[in-house]
Length: 167
Image (cartoon, rainbow, N blue to C red; front, side):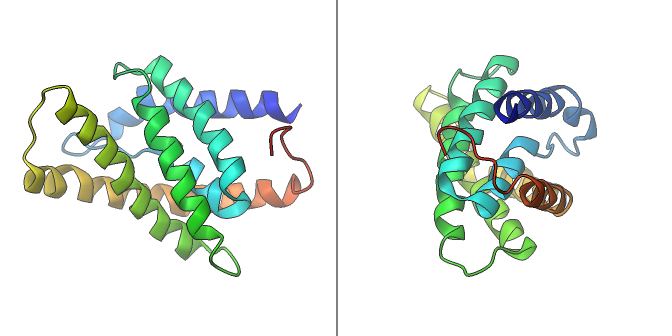
């Protein structure tokens, strides 16, 4: 039952991210819900579980968005690995760690997307992008993490023994 609920929940999160959250954008920047969910899960359950979430959520986002196929998946998997690795170095995961890792993985995913843009022939102004896009997204994502982490922590406590087959 759990894998099917995971597919539905992450699909719903991806749908909310591409359809509803852009309506709440400020200066063209909106929060990255799925990135924060994957990061929070990495803090709570570790790298392997988070990579599974990242693959599922990334594929949903790649299917629903108009960006290059694989861009979201690549960024989410890299973020899940980084957050899972960093969370293993602490004794007890906290919401502060989750918010700090949320900011770090926002930089990682944005960096991957900017690199893909440059590889495809696009141009960017790095200082302008950092000031007008990345900084507001980090603030937005921190707010989302403050809401998402307690919910996922509760889910982790209730389903602590249940693991996906690949975990």
